[in-house]
Structures are given as structure tokens and as C-alpha cells.
Length: 176
Ligand code: HEC
Image (cartoon, rainbow, N blue to C red):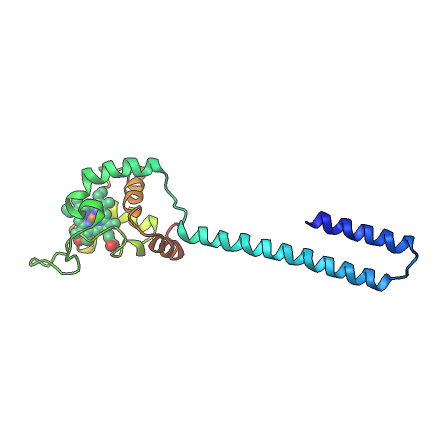
């Protein structure tokens, strides 16, 4: 398309020279016109590239963890956490209501409660120390899980978070 336009321009220049017409002004207009078409083509192509990029960005936010994290995370979650935090990290239904003894029930970790308000190191610390230091009841896992195992468990429950929740967590500095 562009090549064809250039060819036409070239032929036109030749022709005007051969028959000796002094049409410099016309030539300039033709050139400006050609440049405008070219420029428009580039901006349209550019616009398209950008819009498809941003659509892709919204539909899938890149996560920090790998399938390997999820694999060992699932095994560890089922061994240590599912008993309280439920299948698929759903937590207790009425997790906002204190129990008769004043304790809070285990909350969901699937993105529907507060877990996403905490960055990776705070989440790690919560799991290492449990809830007792803060007046809660969750047991400490420091002696049972290594740092990497804790990260794998976090990856496992983060995988239930929607892209929106995950993006908000990132914005709050989740990875810092
Ligand atoms: C005996 C029950 C129990 C077990 C087992 C348990 N938790 Fe908890 N967890 C709780 C309770 C209850 C809370 C609410 C705070 C408290 O009372 O300590 C909590 C809170 C949390 C929080 C903070 C959530 C928030 O919204 O801030 C995280 C994260 C968490 N647990 C992760 C885990 C992980 C990961 C495991 C497994 C390694 C686990 N828990 C095992 C009972 C448990």
C-alpha cells in the first residue's frame, strides 16, 4: 500500500519533469498529503497495539508465584490450615461474629476478608507467630513450616483471589 503510493509519487515526479511542467507547489501538496496518510496509518496501528495491551493487562494480572508454589502450597494447606480455614480457604461463614467465648472464628483467606490488606512479610509473620500475641487463637507455625513453605501456602490461598483483589493488594505494596 505504502510502496504503491511511493511508486505513484515517483512516476508523477518523472512525468512532470519529462513534460517540463513547473508544478512544484502541486508536488509539495502531494507530498504533504502522502505524509499525512502515512502518519495516520502509524497512529491507528499504535492505538490498536495499546488498546489490546491494556485489555490483556486487565484480564490477567501477573502473579508472583509459580505452579510449583501452588502444588506444595495445596498439600501444606490441607495438612495444616484447612481444619480451620475451610476448603478453598473459604473460612467460617459468620467469621465477623465473635463466638460465645469471645474468640473470632477463622476468617476466609480467599480474598473476601482482610488477608489482602497485608503484605507478604506481614502474612508470613502472622503464620509464623499465629494470633496469640495479638489476643487471637490461631496457633503459631514457626516451628512446623519453613519460610518457603509459608510462601507456598500464601500462594495457594492467594490463587483464590480475583485479579481485582490481587491488583489492589499489589497497589497497597503487597510485594514490598
Ligand atoms: C486452630 C485454627 C487455625 C489454624 C489451624 C490456622 N488458622 Fe489461621 N487463623 C485462625 C483464626 C481464629 C484467625 C483470626 C485471628 C486469630 O484469632 O488468631 C486466623 C487468622 C489467619 C490469618 C490472618 C487473616 C486476616 O484476615 O488478617 C492468616 C493469614 C491465617 N490465619 C493463615 C493461616 C494459615 C496459612 C494456616 C495454616 C498454615 C492457618 N492460618 C492455620 C485459626 C486458624
